[in-house]
Every structure is written in C-alpha cells, then in structure tokens.
Image (cartoon, rainbow, N blue to C red; front, side, top):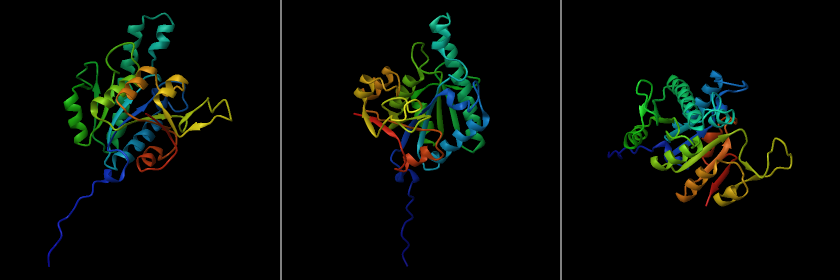
Length: 249
C-alpha cells in the first residue's frame, strides 16, 4: 500500500489577501468613553485581529492617537504644530502597547515597532526585520506615525503598507463603507460598493487624508473601508463576504 504524501493546505489560501494593513483610529479604542482606553473594547478588537490571524493572514497595524492627544487640536489651541504632532505620536505608542498586551493575552505573538526610538518599550523601525516578523506570523503594530510631524497616521499606514508589501489597507470605521454624505445625519445617504481614488479626492469623501490617498493611488494599493463595530466583519471580508467599500483604480 502506497501512502500519498501529506499536503499542508495553508489557511490563508482560502482568503482574498495574504498580507494586509489594518488601520484604526485611536477613538476606536475608547468605546463609549469620551477619552482614553476602554479595556473591553481593546480586547474585542484584539479578538477580531486574532480571528483573521487564525486564517493564516499576515497582519500589520497602525493605530491613531486621537483618544489621548491629537496634534491638530493642540496646534489649534496655540501649541507649536511640530511639538503637538510629536505628542500625538507618543499617544499612538501607548495605544499600540495596549493592543499588544491584549493580543498577547490571546496567544498572538506581537511586535510594537516605533518610528521614534524608545528601545525600552518598542523596537526601532527596520524594514527587513519587520518583514521577517510578518513571515514568522507575528502581528506588527507600527507606532509613532512616520516619525515626522505634519503627517497623519493615515499616511503612516499607507507608507508602511507599501513598504511591507501589503495587498490592501483595511480601514476600520464606525460605518460599513464610504457614503456620499454622512449617514448619521442623512437617511438618504448612499453607500459606494467601489469608488476610485480620484473620486475620493475630488468629492472629499473623507476616507483618508489626501496624502494617503495619493500614495495608495500611485502604488495601486486598494483600501477596504468597513465597520469595525460589526462582529466578525474583518474576518468576513477576508473570507470573501461582508459589506464594505473598496477604493481602487
């Protein structure tokens, strides 16, 4: 009797993408609070990430810092813009450490990689090392933006996604896609199934800032906008179902 060789079918073979960037706002971590971190919400997001990681998908993350400090708001109140932006970058490190703790509590190996050197709490950003972490199925959380003021975490997410060779950016929001107007204010708002980069810029649809959209367009990197509040939504899209808007060329 001849035994056929065992063939390992990688779970990611069943998904749409093999390596993705998940971008979420800092406000997504504060739940119903008006400020800071809400541990049950952080854990819920970690469980969503784990469900996708369990499919074999390699995951990068960028988290905003608006739940703690937003550079533009500090600048508007009279603070020097560069200083305010650096403070916002430090807020993203705090959020990254919180999510790292939640993920590792679920058994997911994670690395926080900071664009601002702080060796005691995070690794410095080295592109080839970060790629190796992904290949070893570790979740990489990129913190401190690009390391430069005047750039948003949207731009940082798009930059890192391109550097890491991600196949798409998943932008988790409070709504299930991109609408022609605010669905919370206008009941007749219509959701786009797909929309072009140029339309997002021309119609000011607010998916990401203009620099991030232009960088994604120039590198043909699709952006998937979906609801982070829908349980299983992230995993569902990776498995080829769910409601979302795809921004592409």
